[in-house]
Every structure is written in C-alpha cells, then in structure tokens.
View: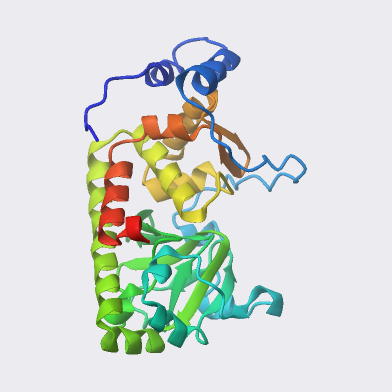
Length: 319
C-alpha cells in the first residue's frame, strides 16, 4: 500500500467541514453515495433506550471515571453466562493445534466481561488468560500524575496474559482493562503453560503472536508520533470494529480521548468531521460506523500495515 495517497474527494471535504457552511445532508450524500459504497452494519438499535450521558466531572485517573471490578469479581457470574467446552471464536485460539485444543477443552470457560473490569494489574501474578471473542481489552499505562493512555488493544485475534509464559507476572507499568463489554474464553495459566512447554507447534504459534503484538505496540508508537488525530481516530475505530465484530460500540468521547492520549476536544472535533461526512453516526455514549470504505480511506497506513503483519505472522490466509 502506498504511504503517500493523493487527497481524495472525501478527504478534501472533511478538511473543510469546520470552515465551510455546507449542509450536513450534502456531505452525507457525497460520502455515502458518490465517494464510497456504504457498509452493511447491524441495525441502529432504534428501539433501545439511550445510555446515560458520560460524566462531565473531570478526574485524573480512569479509576474515578468507571466502576472497576477485579478479575476475581469477574469470575462470579450467573450460570447462564458460563459454559465449558465452548467452540473458540478467537483467531489465536483457532490457530492452536487441534490436539492441544482437545486436551484443554475441559479447562475453557466462556465468561461475560463488563466494561471497567481489571483483568491483570501491574506486577500481579498471571493466573488466567483471556481469549476475547466479542469484547475488547485495553493494555494501558498510567503516569504518576494519573494520566492514562492505551499502549495496545486485545480482541478476537489476541490473548490477554501472554506474560504467563515469560516469568508469570505482568510488567510494572501496564494494566489490562475491559474497554468494550462482551464475551471471552478464559483458561488457567497452568494448563496453558503445560501445553506451551510440551507442544512445539503451540509454542511456535504463541511466539509468533508475541511478535505480532510487539509489532502492534511499535506501530502505535510511530502512529502517535507522526500521524494526525483525524487519521489516528479513524484507524482506532477500524481496529475496534475488527476486534469486536460489530459496527456499533458503547463509547464516549472522554474514554476515546483517554485511549488515544489526546484532549477530549480533539476527539470531539475528529468525530464531528466524520459525522458530518456521513462516515459515522453517534449519540451520547454510543457510536456506529456507517461507511467502512470511507473510514479506511481516511485512516493512516498503520491500520493496513499492522493487518498485513498479523496475517503474515499468524498465517491467517491458511486459517
């Protein structure tokens, strides 16, 4: 993919939205009908009640903004939300040898994770791994002054707890927090380590995944330093969509600003441009992607580069 793309019709329109008085209807028509074909997302949930608006109270840490629950609390779920032997819907889990999955089938538990649950704390011994299927987990770093930023994301092609194979503890600075609610497949670290140590094919898959995850973090560093917030915001939405298999998510501008490491006003400005161009639709606490092709055009090269790296390392073409 070329790293230097000529400005297209939608890009020029978006860059001038804040300066021109063009009607939103005209911009929506141009983005949806002329520039790119519309995607086929799920229904807009017209009958669902709006979620409560995000709190406007400023705070220094994410822990004050959300009601966090520990991983031990996450284990206590109604029986209907857990099932053993669930077929994996996680790409990484699917890439493990069938013999390994068969031996571990009795250890796999499908759990429902709620937003704000802390799965791994800094320096904590990793006792469980989580393979997300419909949820998304953020790997966050919090500074001494309380500011938090997302260093990486874990969804349906990854696992939370890879450090279980590398000393058994999470590194000091990072914390794993559920960003978008949904389901994950949970397994104890001990049976995973047994298989990791005795099965060379599984070990190869997990090591290649570790390389892919390191590539994600490296790409994030370059992206955050070199690309504009509009491009980064578009890329971030695409990656959320890929990981949770949905076009609609419960997200607030405040939370997205935390994850991107920018001011809330910057996210609001980027979201307004996309909304006015018909690329997304939003309401308090909820965001829906309307035009995938347009969002891809507006994203930086990092989205496609990282996608290709994951495909190569995890051999997704032969999955």
